[in-house]
Amino acid sequence: MRLSIGRLGLMLLPLALVLAPVAAWAAPASQADMSLYTRMAALNVCIARAAGVDFDKAVAIAGETIAQVIQGQHQSRISQVSDRPLSVEELRKGSINSAVLGAVELCPKEVPEEVRKKVDEVLKITTEGEPATKPAPAAKPAPAAKPAPAAKPAPATKP
Image 1 (cartoon, one colour):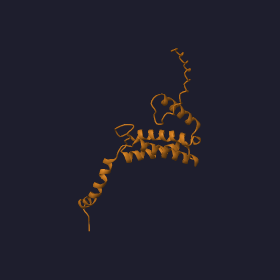
Image 2: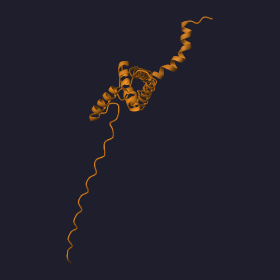
Image 3: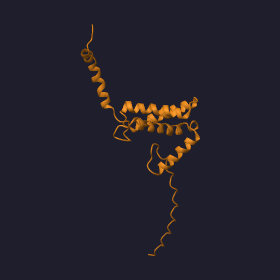
Image 4: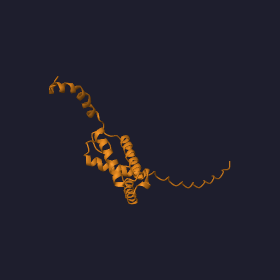
């Protein structure tokens, strides 16, 4: 029995109808999604570094993985960043930055010192303005106010 293209197309039509809406329903990556992806990328960098992988290679692989996940699962869209789909280069850059920031937080000893210093500089600058990726450290509590001097009792009046 020989299948024609028309019959094959008809056989695959139900599959296409099932799969096509998936892409249309893909929501942009949420803040929670991005936190998860950043942590996964950072953990991958930490594990790779502990296994002796070069830092740049570990970060590139972790960043590319996250970029591909965002591209495939969220149609290259991140709700915190833009309404439009991001280019693969934009996704890579952001994912690599996220992997580095996360690795500095999770396994600072596995990150080269010069990279840690650059991250510290960037975080210092961003905490003075809007936070970029990592929230600013908690503010120090205000010093306790000095108690006001006790008021002198009013002189008693004679009846």
